[in-house]
Length: 340
Image (cartoon, rainbow, N blue to C red; front, side, top):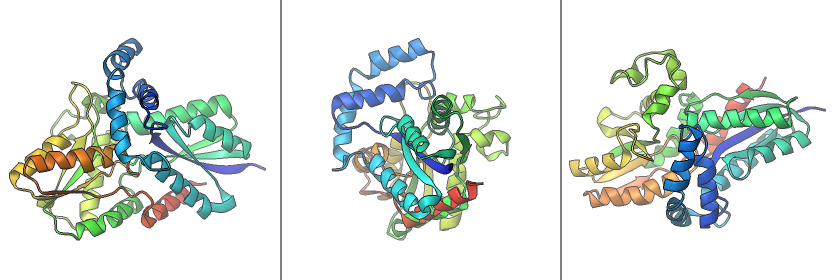
């Protein structure tokens, strides 16, 4: 008897903090043509000659600062979410978890689903916003693996949910205790992207980044525009939370290389706001649903240092939604809505 399945997909982490495991993870991640979108030979040279000789050791040291007894925070939290959704759906749905890079792999998840008789699979990339280096690569890779391992399996996909009312409500609910504290400014820090990624994802080829306010001009390209979707999330959040325009700002983190990335840059904004007189800073990272290296180390540790060295006093990271009850409710509702 055929069953229905749900595949949750997140980005991934190294299997351990050992330099060799971090190198393996970075190699797989950075050699993805949707992450570093250059011809294969150029990408290979950049990754293997410029990045992997030194970056794995640096990243391993960063991972050691956030590692949990059970492993990577991203994987551990994602596994707990999977287990809770399986409990909620019971025998009606087989819930599996996969990472786009490393473990648990997409191939192992498809094997498990196939062995349990799943013939209809709902793919749920845990990325609220569309980007070729996150949502798109996860979906395409899953489709490729299913086509080779289980071509009889029928697929459907949950689209980016950046403005879904339940996602916004869960995001605001998870941030509420921090928003009720004494703070001067809230910074929305989204993961950055090279500007060229936005242009490549623009089906019109003439809208994204052509004018300063392109994200505010209605256009079909917003369906695949990461920046427009990030700003949409902010608009919905501040409306729901009742924030005033001078209480918050938006920035983008984690740039790599010399090409221009989405601006303003988070580290520059932390310095600017501190020098402007902001003393108590809150930072929220809505592009991530689970805490990871980019939130726990890049923001809560290095970001805090940058802010304080520039004259700020307190920087508090608002945790990702992780296993917040309202987030689990939102996930459950989005899945039920998507199922035929």
